[in-house]
Amino acid sequence: MRWLLLSLGLIIVVALCGTARALPKYNIPAQYRLSVATAEPTNCLVRVTGSVTNDFRVSETGEVTIDVPRLPRSCSWVCFGFTITDGSPKNLKAIQVLRDGRVLRRFSVRQIEGLPVDSAGARLIRL
Image (cartoon, rainbow, N blue to C red; front, top):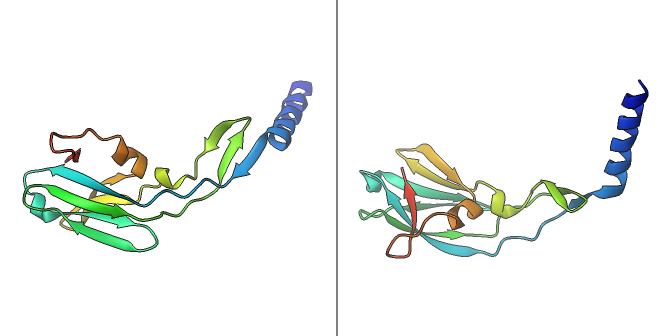
């Protein structure tokens, strides 16, 4: 019982003294060139959901250029410099790849930026 109270007290002290809620910066609106690798790219579209939802059709070659607007953000929990929950707009899965109205993949801006780049400079998405 004594250890339980001590542990509870320690948790309360850490929560009160070392934890903060922080509002991250907005993302900078950007444009990305994507290359969708699939058998029938014309059946695909890329949807970006922000303050407004925009749909971008994939061309016959599988390439599409998307515009990512400023995305919504939420508070992050930070404890002694370590992020516990990240409310950054770059982690919001606001980019969706759809085929025939079904969502195949969801991406965040951070995931899009981490995709491999093909020889033409487009970020490659394999379906």
